[in-house]
Image 1 (cartoon, one colour):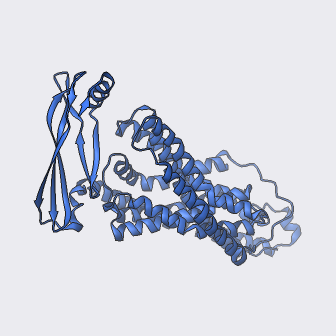
Image 2 (image 1 turned 45 degrees about the horizontal axis):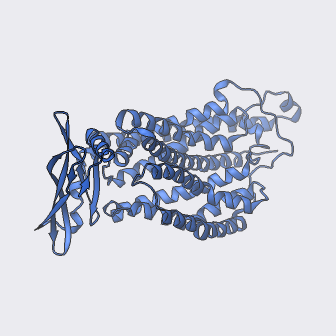
Image 3 (image 1 turned 90 degrees about the vertical axis):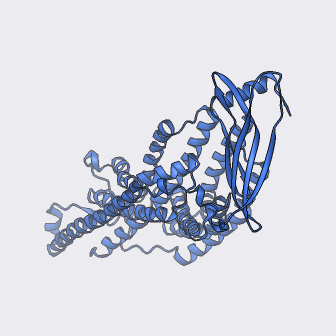
Length: 479
């Protein structure tokens, strides 16, 4: 029984007027219902809920909610809420009970298949283009450098030498702000491993059938893969001559959790202010903090120690000059800032359609289940990112600019800029969200999603580019 005071009356009228609905779970099966209905500028609320529950043996396989009994909302009324439950047997198997919630007409639409095919063709085109252009261009470079080596020193000094060979003494110079760079690379390796593991588990185990299983699996896998972060971040920091390895290890271990927890806690304060059900319980926040301190930190420390000892010695194919070579002036489109902005266009194009399906499943409450598509698109994204970053880096090195580490990372990571820009379009044209809480909730978590994607793409781009740079300089005879 609810006494409808003026304040409660306004709240119910507002909910009915704006077509509010609610979501409940019975045995992890979601059910939805509307608060009320508007008729002839009068507002009614449903006071009776009818649950039809189907069972197979001792297991629930289907739940249906039907709201009934409209009652006019008026100040001072006493509203009595009731419900009834009807049980009936069903032949639906327990493992198939989620099939009714899946939307094959949406996720397996012809456009989805076409986008996969389009991205696959882009991969073939890019790989072929990179192979053809770089192999032919590099062959000419090698021939030109071999001819230069046959001339004597006087002719070589008077000659017009240019190109990527001229910066062989600086190309393996440590990146600026090496501590942050190595921390981001370590976090990127870890996040890439987490994405591949979680998608694989989702394909094999159908994680969407259990509420919260995707989030709990992600947290567990992230904590378990912390040694990967420590190994690759710590070894890279050691190879680049870093000395404060404990500080680097702490930054590498907490850079992603700090961003996630900071954003989540900020949104949580807004949720608490609005008394929203999305508010994270205090116990959950304490548990996540304990995981970071007592699980992630020790595992990252172990990975860092192993990485420094096994792979922490510099093994560059060229010596690094004591004095940095001045970077010559170049055309505006060869500047690192322009390369960075252009580098993310094609990778974003390869995942553009999939972003729409992922956004819709997360923000429009559709159950995403086509993880095979997601795995394929993720692999396509990795290949496209590597190809584009290698081309960008080659142009940069050919302009005799040796600042390729950060440029390769940022040109690949700029994909996240376009993803976040697309989230603005999706918010204003595809959702009906409004108000401080919904806006902060949406853009806060979309910033985390875009940032994590940027770290992954940046790490993948640096990984491919590092192999490419080491390969071309190891094949050139340096005097």
